Image (cartoon, rainbow, N blue to C red; front, side):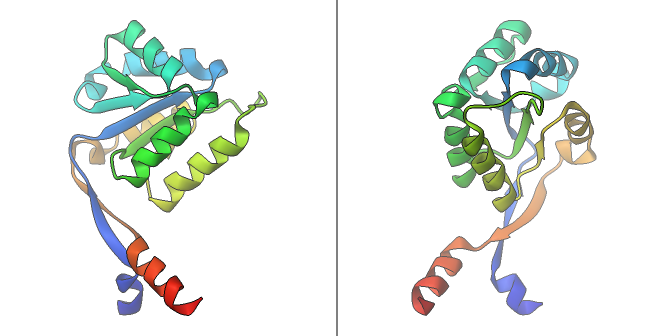
Length: 159
């Protein structure tokens, strides 16, 4: 187990979370309603989102949401980069499983980044409800991710 621990580092998600809010077009109204329903919790945290979604949430709720590009124009990739930088802690991404998405490879890459960096992500309202009502929303949370510097050094040495 000691060897396993050497391959991971512990990061802390603070009490005040950096939350990304994303929704496919068919789910934007649902996400806006979810934000209205959870406004008292969300206003305690830092919010960001893809362009159109961020603007619509701010307009409907008054919550300040920092907008990136829209998803098809790379917004989900911008948020993915913020995850890599340690600047996003929590994601609500209401995806539409019944509509084809032209940027589906980007969405898959985004979901992979969330998995690699052990970021809590809800892809439907029920999961978002469970996450936002979790006792961990008001606490710091330690999670382990791969020690990428060690991983790169090991790969460079063995290739």
